Image 1 (spheres, rainbow, N blue to C red):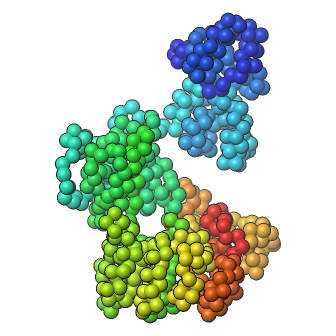
Image 2: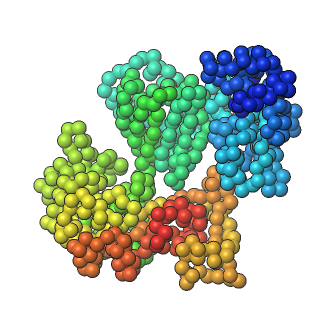
Length: 591
């Protein structure tokens, strides 16, 4: 490799460059020429000095090592790095900051870095690994070579052979996916369509879909970047990076997915939304497809609709017995509003569909207006919102009232008009289910007040408000027991009377990681449910415009379990971990 091809990430300050002259490593003329070039080319001074041949990369690294009091190493002459050492630092972090771990001794790891003066990443590595981190200076080119050698990223494959080998290894899985075609509206670009119909591209797309369904992912992210392609699955609410084909296949993969989703493959400037259906292992799976143009290319996100998980029994969702009793009472009421709240991805749709499935009998006329219709359920009349033609939640609700409904589900109350129609429907003898975006159950009352709903209307119509979150469960395949001090749990807000102690310690559980959970220690999720029953006392508080804090305090007095209280129960019963409890209910520390 010529000197001009060598680069270093560590930028030379003017003072360090002058020291090079004082040490007679370069001349003052060479320094001035390099400074002039730097102003024109906006490159790092060290890179220019090496590129012009004024100094070798090794010599300048040795100089920097001595001046900064940081050891200098050469990775090329080093012994093989152990896989367990490489596993300490995720590939994404290693590539982003041009570093690689090369040794571990006791509670300390040694990391080769192109910029060992970056103290922020050193702090992050300490937090991430729980070890002391010793930085060493190394050539950027050697680090990049080592990254390719030890991480073996699919995005750096030179040709299709590597992906085809992976596809062959999972041939049963890939070939088991059958696209259920729908009629296309018009023909698209023939050349792009041909590339999308190539056998390797079809196998790659089938493999991506099959692996996502096998991993029980809820979403698939296909993201293009300047030089590579990234594929991530959202599993149990957390994104996990997957092996990806080279960037050159991105256009063909996009075209293939657009064809399957009946979208316009020639349109690459505007966002598009569609649906596709595949059959895997004699099971049909619906996917919602969103295509978004980004600077490096089109990003595709596919939401996988798991119909098997939407009609489960209420008792299997994770409700505590007291909360489930309140939910069942309100669900069987002849009229009124039941609200489900929580952020996106908290399982609101699953709870609603499970409730409606339980109520879905020939005696009930059930109608829903949704955006979008997640899953079509036999026996329920479902309407898709289409705002562009005036079919909004409010418009759909208004029409429902002329369709003799018994039970109505509104996908989301977004504005005052929708809220007022839903309340009027509840007051005229209909049972209404809907969702709001609030952090907890009492906050829904405040949210409706802010929309402009009068307190006398909300107090007389609302039966129950449910706030929910999803917490990851411990993988049963690698679940292990450990003990912690009871005082530590008490500081986290765990009531002492709920602790079963032995010698001042409490037994908890965690997953150590296995093939069944992809090394995460978690498998599957359960719901946390904060169920607020609107009693006469709370109705009066709503009329008096009491704050959400006051309503929450009253709810707890009458038996409501907060999200944090529910998570504590699941922690102590061995369902989840301390880390998950804190992550999911960090905003509910008062529970």
